[in-house]
Image (tube, rainbow, N blue to C red; front, side):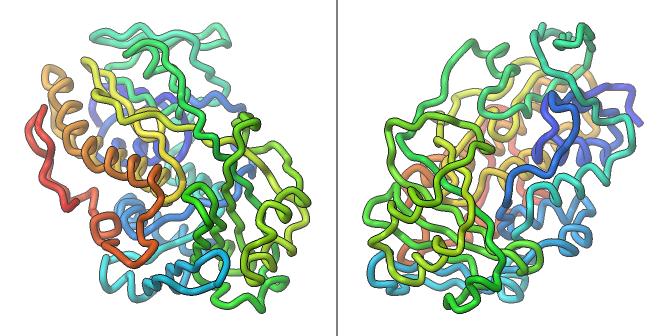
Length: 385
């Protein structure tokens, strides 16, 4: 085990994946999470094959598959006619093509799998960061009047990252003018909807309007995710209740199969969606960023969690066997390997037309974070994009 201590601010999916990956290469890790503990909040995480490949390499495959569902296909349908514009076989077909299937899983089950792979004491709860003093050893201060020093600091603390602010100054995410609705219904209520075991995207009359559904909890539940333009709703919380009546009214002109999904909803959560433009830099000295802290994206390509896990694996590989004098170079190699891909996905997610009429899924799904080349610092790595 290395004497170097790597601190990770943020115990979400990317931060915990990084902790597991870094420990697998012999590093000491401390994870500072502001929440007092993990509760069963949120609803879904869509793990496409690239994300599953990265997680399988962390040794989490069996545990993920114990609770996840495996969508049979990725289907696009038009909002009004129901016409199918693309169909991509997933499940066993994805496993044969990409080495991993698509898994859809409750966020709490994914976090449980991640925390279960870490020994006790690695995650320190109730640590809300209030100040960062970057340096050869970064000093962290928390709102419980404690502090810590680490040799390498990773900001995995989300779209409002305090670590990013400490590195590059204050900035604010941009409200997209789009809101999202989320609901979970028992699959038995919507069994009559065609292809209910698939990931189905209903493309709306404009790029901001859509309905996405897919199975959860080994298919016993169905997740419903819908977006629509609304400039006067800016609440960002993912736990704020919305109106089921409003949800149904917004999509009243959609195809009957889509409306049947909304009719089955008893309650719904509502949140505004925010984005940032791709950052020109992620790292400074021995401090770097990961996941939403450096590349928050719209959910339309379902790559937020997946790219955070990819970051975690590539970062751990970049730091493997590196002495203290070479840490800054290693972080630049990580950044160079990741920035082009994540920027392309950020911008593609914002445009929201990927796989509407078939198209190339391989550049997203076939990516293997365990094998992608790590180029020299300051140069984009050669990746299949």
